[in-house]
Length: 277
Image 1 (cartoon, rainbow, N blue to C red):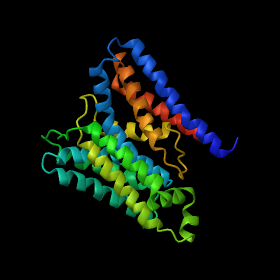
Image 2: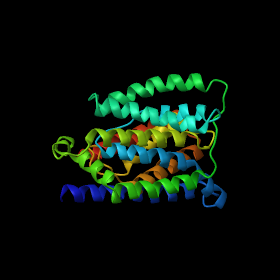
Image 3: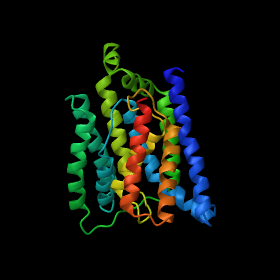
């Protein structure tokens, strides 16, 4: 079996997991298939989908962005002041991350971890006494971005360059591709998507940092290789629903939040181990 065939087979695992979780939720919840419950699930997963799309683009370049949870928290705190300022915060965070990675050669995990730590502190200061704002029609926004990102990856020069850089950054540079510009643009998009996701309404049990972790998990379980060179848009959406339905099932079973986070961690580890085989 070739490497491509291996990734294709792994990519289908996320859809199988999604089907299993639908069955499990149906079995443990009497009203899971009601229109009200389904609508709640779709609304709840919209911020995860939006943030995960940005993460998928970054991982496609062979990088990672750990700061999205902090960016979401900052944007949620700034939204009541100014929606444009909330989105600008995401753009600035993405520009900083992309510049550290592309211009200064800092490892993506180090650069975005630093922004995560600093961003969480800033978010705490900004959110003091404020309530997060909201943007109507989160599902519509998420659906539009799924289509746009799919088009961006499959049909544009930027998408082809992103995949090429993720496959082999040095070779892409030798070939004359604008590596620095593409990397910075990708991190800016990730920051912008995270900022947008941070301003969307979400159930009370969902917090920005948790949603950020779920977004990263969604991309990882989608079968997207962490080595880069591939962006799975539909798989990322399916991965977001997997994480949402898993959380829903655990909450239905009255599982503590701390245990839910540990389950998420185990899923990430298993997905990463599968990807290294």
